[in-house]
Amino acid sequence: MARRRPLPDFLVIGAPKAGSTALHDALARHPQLYAAAVKEPKYFLTDGRRPDPAGHRGPGDAHSMREWVWRRSAYERLFRSAPDDALAFESTPFYLWQTGAHERIARTLRPDVKLIAVIRDPVDRAFSNWTHLWADGLEPEADFLAACKDEPRRAAAGWAPFWRYLELGRYGEQLAHLFRFFDRTQVRVIRYRQLIDEPRTTLDDICAFLGVETGLLDGLPESNVGRWAADGRVNRQLRRTVRAGASAGAWLPPRVWRIAQRPLLAALQRDGQAARPRLDPAVRAQLVDTFTDDNALLGELLGRDYSDWLSAEGRGTYTVRRSCDPSKPVASK
Image (cartoon, rainbow, N blue to C red):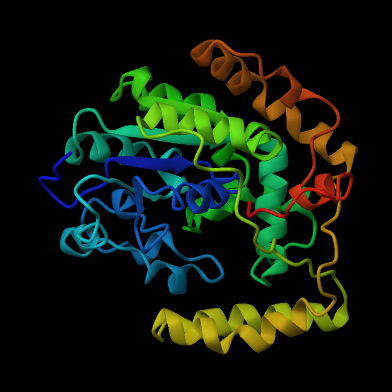
């Protein structure tokens, strides 16, 4: 197929901490697919305007905001090297969550653009989101449940989307809005557990959906999962330093700050590949009910049963699950 303009043919649109990085890296290996050099450009979150600092007031947000690709010309450059016979794509997991992105994607890309969403047990997803930010030293709240309860205040104060631990997992609402702009045949929804537990079958299904050759992707690429960093006096001070440094880093080129923070993160995560903790079932029980209505909507929209997401025990983080089967390779979340 001849490419008439340097724009993607399909997008991986969500959800954060549900396997989008693993899927992106796997699809990038396919000879008929072309992955944008910037994995998560966030272009359709911006409406072609520089991100508003008022919506990036959480720890590290201002620094991260500088990495967003918001100019149309810069976005198109991400795809100019794509071969004419390849399908180009990028992966920004916040596209599923942000309703404004749905209309912008429909307006900008070809009418038959395809979208892929990987969704995950919303409580497990929220916990993985929190552990990611906690281990990176940015999350100031040591109690996961307290951080979830603080979400409305944080959102009102202008913290960026990644801090919306519970809201990001309301896939029913998100897909209902998405289907106002796209035919359901254009959208492939994959469960996280499918991608992790049956990677070859799931990748073949996605390749068939995209119309490229199947049988070429044999699994998810191996990569390091994030390290864990426990609480404690020393680590509390290191976290304060990381957050202060991230604020100062907002005035530096993103690459400079990422290099500068490496010693701090190495010290914070000095225990190595310590397993991330399991979510306390009692904590899970307090959060599951917040998704009951959305879970029902999701099942109605997709004609599938997601009632296992309302159970008292989740599936756990990938590292916890892998500990039960050490023969499986480690894949990005």
